[in-house]
Length: 196
Image (tube, rainbow, N blue to C red):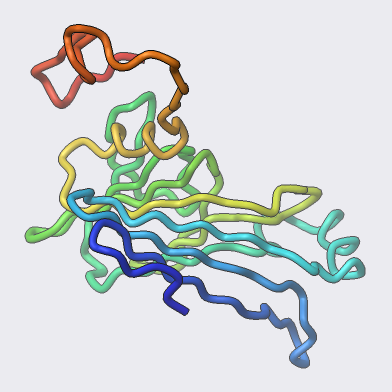
């Protein structure tokens, strides 16, 4: 369902049910996808609800790497190079369980796609072209998750930091300062550097 289709923002919502063996409902989900004009990041919000309490009780004591709810990512090229961010730097990985709360960069000769995890650090690869980001495993209580997909960014850690650090807006009684509505605190001319 398209909730908003304006000139600056397009937002679509999908709802569904996650089923287990025998088509038993395990959880309901709501997924919101946002695309902004001029921004190379697709925002994805996932909310889980109505989780089966019996299934959750079994999940609490199960191996979290074999029993979980996840967001599955897939890409078409099995020869793509994967780099996880580690301390804001890209690091080549071939691990079956790459850990990074920030981003995983999938690079081919023609395209770079960064998966932004919004703080979720545990992932599991399935073959050469799929990855699960664990949402609910063990005794996890979180039910709202935020992801992003960034296209063709050389340094995706900036987008990963933006995803978890929303801009703050403060109401004021007076207008902008004499210098105008914008200004610089400082400026960096190197995109591979981050000030934290």
